[in-house]
Length: 252
Ligand SMILES: O=C[C@H](O)COP(=O)(O)O
Image (cartoon, rainbow, N blue to C red; front, side, top):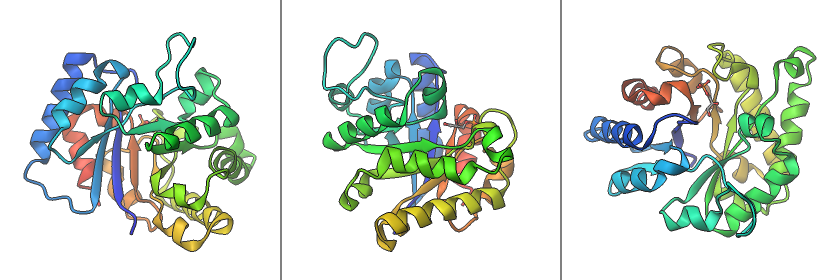
């Protein structure tokens, strides 16, 4: 059965001290809370990963990186490999975030390679995709999302899907304060589950968690997370505040 997930993407926020402080606060607040079916993930910057992993050890909080390079090693100045992430205890990575696609020119092809590299290293992947506003206005959003999911992930065998978490993030809703309505999110999530079922089978589709991301906050999370095919959220801004983040974790 698929799990509910709340993942906090800290983006380029929080230096080492602030990262340690935030994760400590989250751990403290979650201590007496038995979240049987909810996974809680935080994704700090590379600089803070090792220390956050150490703090989260022996807790139920999981730690993800925000990116990684597809190559094993080599002359790629400024990049980090899967092996390097593993060496500091990180077994999960966010790939395909729209900010990576837009500002760092990550293509579907590169992302498919990154996905393969991460899986080869037994890492779990939060794979992001989503349409820009023009796509939605021109009613191309389903087509755009379908091609991002296909190009990034459909080279995988069905057995690899146990390590995939999907995150639908309409770009027009990221950091804008404007969320997709619960109905818009549900409609897209059901569509994604259907294309996965068509490509693989119902079991793969039913077992993959599909997160929604884009201006999720305590005031709107309950309604969005209550939708049948929405299995949680990938949270940006609201994940930087421990109280808000914990409220989101408790929003199912
Ligand atoms: O990765 C998280 C998403 O980009 C959502 O960001 P946001 O919650 O600040 O809109």
